[in-house]
Structure formats: C-alpha cells, structure tokens
Image (cartoon, rainbow, N blue to C red; front, side, top):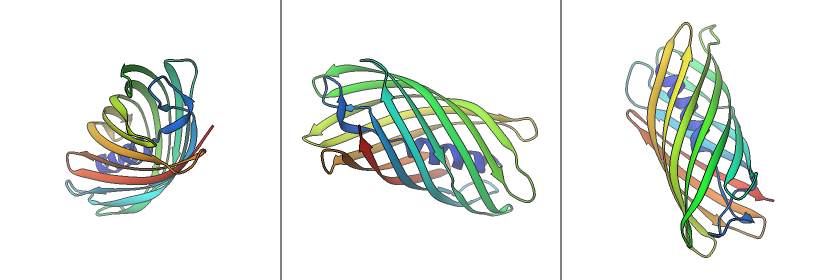
Length: 203
C-alpha cells in the first residue's frame, strides 16, 4: 500500500509546471499559468511493484511579488503486484514563496496540502497529508528554464497508517510561443522513479 501512495505523490509533484514569460518576476521567470501533463511513475521495490500513469491538470499564479498559490488534480491508474488494477484520484493545493538570488535565478519554498483516494481490491482508502519543498529555478538561456527541487511528504490513513518520503526532481521548460511552454521533468526517490511531459498556457 505504501508504494501506491508514493505513486500518487510522485505523479502530483512531478506534474507541477512553471512558466517563463507572463506575470514575470525581475529574474525573467513567470509563475502565472494553466497546464496539462502526462506522467508515469514506476515502483521497483517492495511488495507492490508496478507502474501508474495518467493525466493531470494544474494552475498557479502570483499573489504579489513574492507569494504564489498553486493547485493540481491528477488521475493516474496502473497495475501493481498483489493489488491488481488501481485507480487513483488526487488533488493538491499549496502556497509558495520566491526570492531572487541572482539576475536570472529564483529560490522557492512551498507547503502543500495533499488528498488522494485509490481504488483496488474493493477498497477505497483516502490519504491526507502535506508536503514541503525547496528548490531553485534559473533562466539559463532565452526562453529556456532549468529547475531543481527537494520535497518531503507525509500522508496518513487511519487503516493503513502513515507514509512519508523525500523526492528529488529536475526539470526543464522551453517557451514555444508567447503564450505556450513545453515542459519535461524527472523525479526519483528510494525504490521509485518517474517522469512527466506537459504543455502550459501563460497568462
């Protein structure tokens, strides 16, 4: 069961995207966007190995120069050893802060509320918890962003107990036009890895 929860968190956090031009900060990075993404996450350790994949939608916007809010909804599904087919519905909402440390680099920190429901073997447990994250974003070339973050999450279900872990994510984005950016990222933690690709609209 723990690996299912890790999959939920991976797909959610992995699909978080950032924009490059609209709602721009002094570093040339933007936090105003609406995006869609496809993500895949593979568990290769423990009792419930398998792969889950699916779509997610998300949005974020700056409230002022340094504070932004964001949200994400994901709908992955997959097959896991010992559990069979698993369908997942998960949403996240959070608050973040940013600060410039160079002319083209931001550091960020965020806190996220997590809520997920998975259906398998006639069961539908709901896990609720939080995640905290710190990272950096850099405009490494015109229209090209690179980013990195470290996230810790902790979720709980009264029947199945508590699950927690630390994830490391690297990502990139390239602005395709004035209003659209393509994005890809890779996330890893102990016994698990995943990736996502997506497209965001800048506003």
